[in-house]
Image (cartoon, rainbow, N blue to C red):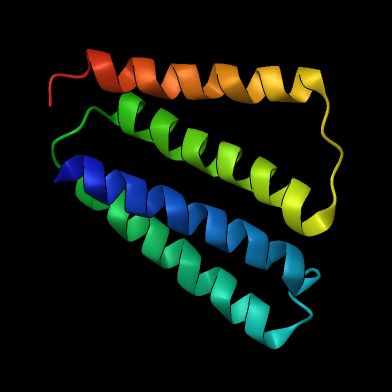
Length: 106
């Protein structure tokens, strides 16, 4: 169950990061509110996962999900540039996330 909590936390991290972009420096009310709600929800689920997962593993996976998700959505939603080096870096992050999952006992 702790891994499910961690994945949910990662998805909410992506959500609040995207909303943060839409908030335009907290000048737009709804995206700003959604950013704060997403942050709280993400931290809540991260805290649940930390009850049984090692801190280093959970934090790395959480930020990794957030990084990969925001890069992908940045390309899709905001037309951010994508090139082979960026793809390779994202793949390396995914490999690191999978590696941490595989070496964690829980």
